[in-house]
Image (cartoon, rainbow, N blue to C red; front, side, top):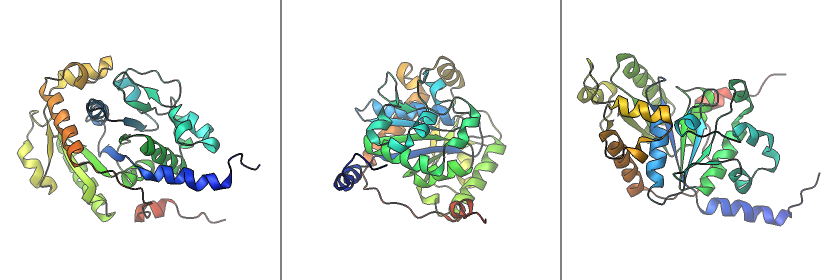
Length: 284
């Protein structure tokens, strides 16, 4: 079927998308349950307080909790985006985003884990590009580890925040993930964040740098009651408990991001070794 859009308008439409591109931040971890979603939503809200356009995408397509953490009940999810992919553009995508009271716009994960398979490589690619064209920052809460879709999000991101804590198993898995990122040529854009850095543990926060071989770390203090309450009621602690130490740490991280931010023109990235393995052509 011929398109209703004149062909000479297509390059103009593409050039507008390339005029300005926001910054994409992937929040990841080598282990689940250590605060990845909490950091993603609070960072997004902290950034939005600076009159900045912020979008957040729930990249845990099976068991995403971004909507829960923000007390949202999505009318649309990325599954609906998939169903309308043929007519998708940046303006159509805006209709699928859920508006939070903070000003953050959310693209929710599917409401059933079996729908995750509908979110293909091409869907992720298009959705990220269109959200980046409409926002100054796109925060993506990825799935655990280096699953194929999480890896794609990490590769596409301008910066990667890798969360860890002081537990032995988490540190071990984080070190392995960092080593893998180095093999893939992605380690330069990784910032390690030590969550609950003041928790009681055999490993001290001051030891993490040497264990992981990372010179510059970001530390977020342990205020588990504040964080748990925030998650349970669906109100980010940077909104209603801004004077707590944990909120101050997130605000400081947001300020550092804003101070170094530069708008980059989008340039397609070459696929990594691991991604090329995942996307080998099938033998017939």
